Amino acid sequence: MLAAMSTPPLRSSSQATAVTRDRGDACPGALRLHAADDGALARVRVPGGVLTVRQAEALAEAARRLGDGDLHLTSRGNVQLRGLADGCGGELAESLDAAGLLPSAGHERVRNIVASPLSGLDDRGLRDVRPWLSALDTALCASEAARRLSGRFLFALDDGRGDVAALDADVTVRAAGGDRALLSLGTARESLSVPGEDAARAALTAAETFLEAARESGARVWRVTELPFQDELIGTVRDRLAAVGVDAAIRVRPESAAATAGADGPPPGAVGDALSVHAPLGRLTPLQWRELTALASATPCRELRLTPWRGVVVPAPGLRGEQVTDALARLSVTGLVTDPASPWPRVGACIGRPGCAKSLADVRADATESLEAAGRAGLPLYWSGCERRCGHPRGERIDVVAVGSGGYELSRTAPGREPRTAPMADPSRLAAALGEITP
Image (tube, rainbow, N blue to C red; front, side, top):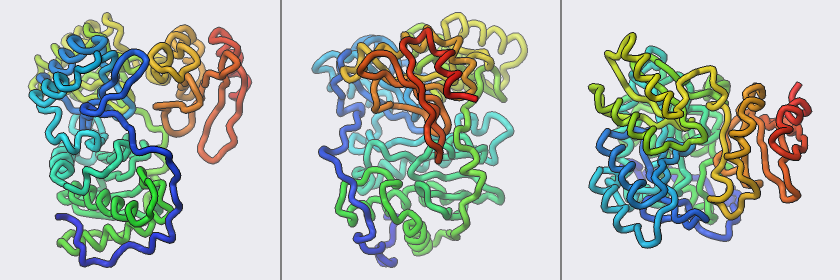
């Protein structure tokens, strides 16, 4: 047990602001399927986006046998299987478990961990966070308290480059100099400096401390930012770590963490000791997945890393020259993006029609039709079939939202600023509408 119960208790729950919800957490998982218009949906958590070749093959086989055949990447580096037939839940769970994708049935929806995809593969990070990832996932699955985390609660393990630190995680651990790590909670103004070897322990302690605070608040609280006393949680986490011998010191949260808001993921192409591709709108066809898996099978690492930016990184140390060129060419032929100049990595969309009953438009078809104009936007552009904006990116962006009267409304969204909006009758008018909301 990581949290020391003899340490000072959290402040009174009277300081909490109630969060009103009319239902419990319905976030789908691999065992709790969601009924969509195109069939059942399963969301398979892939901590850090890391898949072995065997696991990648098992996912492809499950999609082929039980679903629509495609694999759909999420903004947390997880995989969704869509178009699943009624009554296939048991067969799906059995195949995922055999591939090692369900290490704990009670924790399968809470294994939400993003990690710097290029960690250990180039020279930009301060340390390889893979040991943190393995340790945190193991500790998470061993924690009885962690079973109560929402399926929306997110951990981020950043190797110091600032990529996943910009994803608004509930608990962020970022590599710092001197074999130290900085732990942050939500938007709290302070961080904790802890030894790198204790990073996973500190992250789990922070999550368990949040759960206690959420219980004391008396409301349904799923995310750290829903608590009004985030800054006080940092002190409690420090005390509990100190009680088990972890050297934790409070530090002012570095400005650099906020400055990375909107940071991009790995660009398509050859990056360090890896090949990086982008999957347009997060959808991977069976052919694309087979090519990626075949490439990974021919490398020493034999793994794929899914990114929170709907891309895939294949660690390929030793691949050089014509081998790189040939591999990227094979992937490009399948429709995967390998050119860093492509506009696709800056364009996203929810599932839209016909997959979602709430969607007012086929946003994916419209996004594809207007790709050339979107490439001139200068900001990430996200298409949503309704006002819920499911899966939209963080930071400054352009939202394209379908409206009930037909057409779309564009808005330029930036933290701390009033959005600038413009109507758009149809996708062919995207360039003109962008001109109305951008300088």
